[in-house]
Every structure is written in structure tokens, then in C-alpha cells.
Image (tube, rainbow, N blue to C red):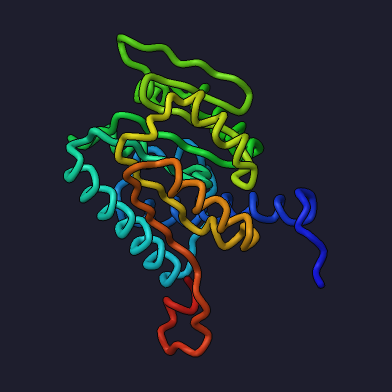
Amino acid sequence: MEPPCTFHHCDEAVIATNDDASDCKRCAVRLGYWKDDYIGYFVRNQDRKAPEINRGYFARVKGVEMCIEKFLKKTDGNCQIINLGCGFDTLYFRLKDTPHQVKNFIELDFPTVTARKCYTIKRNKALLAKIHDEDGEVRLSTTDLHGPSYHLMGVDLRNLDELDNKLQQAEIDYKLPTIFLAECVLVYIEAQNCKNLLKWISSKFITAVFVNYEQVHSYLSKDICRRYM
């Protein structure tokens, strides 16, 4: 039997996947696969990636965007988005440049990740300007950031009591239609903890949609892109 996963020998490796994913997105954006004016604030690396990687991330980003756009149109923006394991994702900032707005946007990840994201946002006026408006203020701590409609918080998704407390701080409305995003997140959570998380979500939220993107075993596939992604 394998030993239980501890922060030091498992979670640090999971946290590192954020840097790799962000580097890949930065490369694809720089090559024109999609437009993202904000990824450059979080990622300076300009290493080139294999074409299959660029195409895979294009499909990933656009697929999630399509799901979100349909949800926002269906709810007319009177909804919430909760990004589980958000990493350096720039979705909130990109949405601010579109007609599609959302009542509450919440991003969650390990405190180590959110601390870096908070620091980057704090030191770049272009990012802060998207969060702050004339009627609201931005509250910052080392790992958490709270704006009028945007909340970035450090939390361990395996700790449901902590998760509930963080969502309360973000002025969550369990009755409001909510879409959850999980991109390559659940695969890194132990099966029982993952089951508990999904069960908790289904019991707390009256109307919820869950968008999940995960890796699958495709070693036998002749499709090179599928083997990479």
C-alpha cells in the first residue's frame, strides 16, 4: 500500500504543474493560437513548445470558454464562477474585456499559488484596474484578495470546513446558479477526498454546473496530440 499523500512529497509536485501549464499557455498565446493580454503578467518564460502542446492547450482553453459562454448567456450573468485550482488562469481578466459579466468570480488554489498570484496582481495596475471599480475597494493579504466581484483565496480543497469558510468570506450565494471549473485538478486529489468534494458541492448549491477537464490514458492512440495531452 502506498503511503498517504502529504503536503511535502505530493502537493509541491502538484503546485509545480501550474508553472508548466502557464508556460504552455504563454507560448501558445505568443504564437497567436488565442488572444490573452494578461498571461504575460504572470509568465515571463518564452520557451517554445511542441506544436501538439500548443494545439492541445488551444482546444482546452476554447472548450472551457464555450461552456462558460453558454452558461453566462443562459443566466444573463446573474451567476457565480468558481475556479478550482485556478493557478495563474486569466479567465476573469479576459471576461472583463467582453460583454459577458458575472456577479461573483471566485478563484481557489493552494496558498503558495495564490500568494504569487496576489503579488503579481498587486504590483500591476492594469490587473488591479480590472478588479477595482468606483464603488468598491480591493482588500489584499499575503494569500487572499477580495474585490467587489472577484475573490482569490488560498485553500486546501480537501478541507471542506476551510473551503466553506473561505466561500463565506467571498460572499457566496448558494442559491445563485454557479459554474465550477476544474482543469487538471481532480486527478491530483485522492479518490475519497474528490468524492467528498463533489458530494459537498451537490448538497450546498441549488443550481450548479461542473466543467471538468482531465487527462486520460491514450497510449494506444495513433493521435499524437491525444498522447501529449
